[in-house]
Image (cartoon, rainbow, N blue to C red; front, side, top):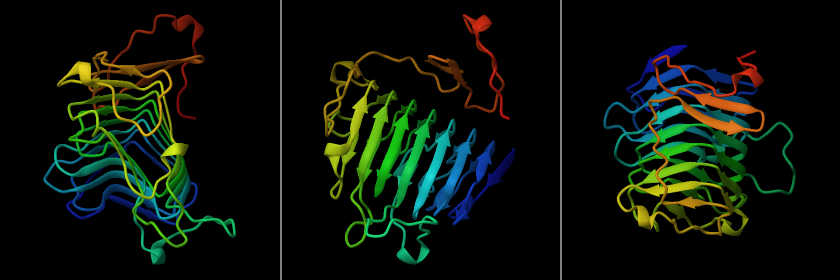
Length: 274
């Protein structure tokens, strides 16, 4: 439960750290780097935290790159404001001298900026590129709320291409709510050096506030059971509830306590940390 106000390039920086947990941290204002930067981190979690770009600085909210593996970015609030900023990013462009490989690298296989990354249950507002997958293998982007990006909500890039680096592949985009105002052809960006045939889109809800009839995005592959043009009526300052077979996941990604009425609470047990 820490608040960090940073005028420097990075708020929190982890390099080559294993089995880490960042929980209930607030980072306000940074410039050029990332609010929470993980380079070569493994088996870690960034959760229940709040990242707010309070000034004109650029950069990324939460980022795992440089050989990171098995990192979960869960239930965070990332407010990026306007301008060229990224919300949550798996991968990126890391100099080889800073690259932290896994403990047991697979010989003969390409290296990736990030592998086995889960980005789930987050709220990302503003910026340009709500969620980015760059130079990655096996990234899952699910159950997030990507609200009003300047242009792109989801980006697939390869910013460290060539040589020993692998092609961006195997990203799944599932069960997200995407509210945008840009052109349907711009809301998803697929860059060079990626393998779009390996991407999966399913059950996402897309809503173009400026033109609901033009809510169907241009995707690199066909989406399964997508919903287009139906206003999800999401207020990120309210409790956000998602239903699963095991119960409901309640997300309050603000600094203010709130309540939520559960209709069939008798059948549930409350899951708390620990």
